[in-house]
Image (tube, rainbow, N blue to C red; front, side, top):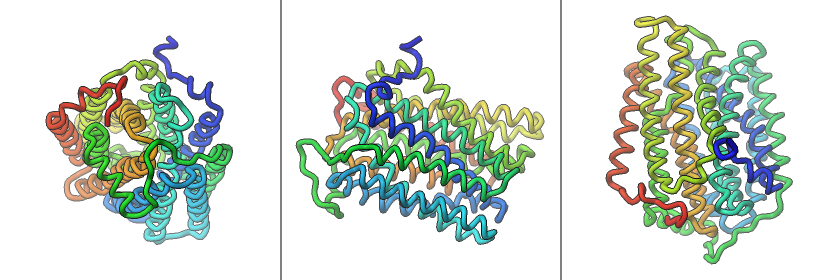
Length: 423
C-alpha cells in the first residue's frame, strides 16, 4: 500500500518545501473560492456565459506579459523575493474584491479589472514558486512533489468552489472574498520562511529583457520533449475547458443554483485528488511522455461524456440524474488531468537547466494559466453561438483529435526516458 498511496517523502525530508507546500494549500483554497465567486457575480450581473467567458480574455494579457518577463527576472534575481512581490499583489487584489462587494458594485468592468490585477500577481508568483521546487528537492523526488502539488491544487479546486457556492448563496460576496484574504496569509507565511534562492547552474542568464525572453523561447523551440508538454496542455485547456459553462449549466440545464456551480467545479477536483491519493507508482513511470498523451486523450473523452449528460437532462432523464452523470464525467476528467500535470511538470523541471528554469516556468505559466483562460473564452463563445452541451462535445472531440495528431507528428515524445531526461 505504501507503494501505491501518495508519496509524502518530500514533505518529510525538506522543511522549506513543507512550509511552502502548506502555504500553497491554504491560499489555493482561497484563490479558487474567489475565482468561483467572481464567475457567479458576473453571471448574476449579466446572465451570460459569454460574459463569464470574457474573464479569460482579461486574465490572459497580464499572464502572457508578466509570465514571460517575470520568468526572465527569475533567472537573474532571488526567486523568494520575486514570489513575495507577486504575493503582495494578490493580497491587495483580494482586499479590493472585498471593497467592491461592500460597496455593492454592479459594474462588470470592475470585476474584469480585478481579474486582470489578480492574473498579474499570479503570473509573478507562480513561476517563482515552481522554479524554487527543484532547488529544494533532488530530481528523484520531483514526481512525488508534483503529485503532492497537483493534489494540493485540486484540494483547493474542490473546497474553494464548494465554499464559494455555499457562502455566496447564504452569506454573500463580502464574506466569500474576505475568507480568500484571510487564507492567503498562509501563502505569505510559507514564502517568507524560505531562504534566499539565487539562480544556479553552469549557464549564465542575460539581464531581463526581450533578448533573455527570446533565449527561453529559442530553447523551447529546439527541445521537442519540453515543447510537447506545452502543446499537450493547450489541447486540453483551450479546446475542452468547461469552467465558464458551469453557471449556465447549473442554472439552466440542471435546474440548480450557486451551490450546484460549486458541486460541478468540485467534481473535477475530487477526481484529481482521488487519483493523487493513489499516485505512489508515478515515480516508477519511465515513459512519461506516453503517459501525458493518453491522459490528455482521456480528458477529452470525459468532457464529451459531460456534454452528453447535459444534453440528456430533461430529455432522457431528470436534472438530478444529469448532475450525477456530469459529476462522474468531471471527476474522471480531473483524474486524467492530474496525471498529465504531474508528468508535464516533471519533464519540464528535470530536463531544463537551472539558469533557464525561470524563463521556462514563465512560459509554462502562460500556457497553464493562460490556456484555460483562453479556453473559457472559446467555450463561452461556442456556447453563445450554439449551446453549452454542444461546446462540451465539440471541445472534447477536438482535444482528442489534436493530441493524437501531435503524438503522431512527434513520436520521440513517447520514447522520453525519465532515467535520462532529455529536453
